[in-house]
Length: 228
Image 1 (tube, rainbow, N blue to C red):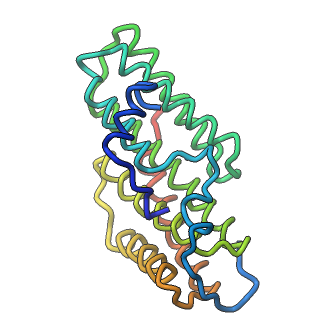
Image 2: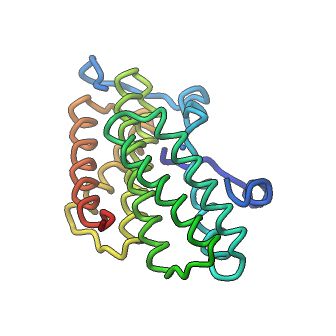
């Protein structure tokens, strides 16, 4: 559990949707100075991790087709499940289970839609909220891993991505984040901004920001957990 999401053109998004109906540490030195080079940005992200733009394209397409084109919606849901399961295979323990659960939930929704089962918009939003939450955990874990490998620019991007996904998850779930959670997200963005500007960031500062974000993600996870 980057922010700076990669710039994705409208044409690229359309291409992605048409192709598949919508197919994602601790530093040993006291301080670091990070220069943003092409080799240390979002391009370093493992190919298994979908970009934020790709996930949003999937969600938007599913929402648009949910009630009027069940075949397309089911296909897009299965595509989301496949991506989440692929990410789970490479995730650490903190994110693996959440991603696998979301993959199962996407498959379950797809099966229901294919059978013609009636699903509410709220049920769809709740499933998306849990998937965004699982993605946030994965990006936060990736941030810590990158920091430990001294890939500080990438760590900052992943940290901010986790903050964005925290807010997206809360929005989809209809949960209002409190001041503590809002500050944790803002602090993560500020830290990434400093890294982008090659400013000094200590290992303690990074760890604190990551820990604060993790605590808020855990709290949100308890609130949006699927009721069995």
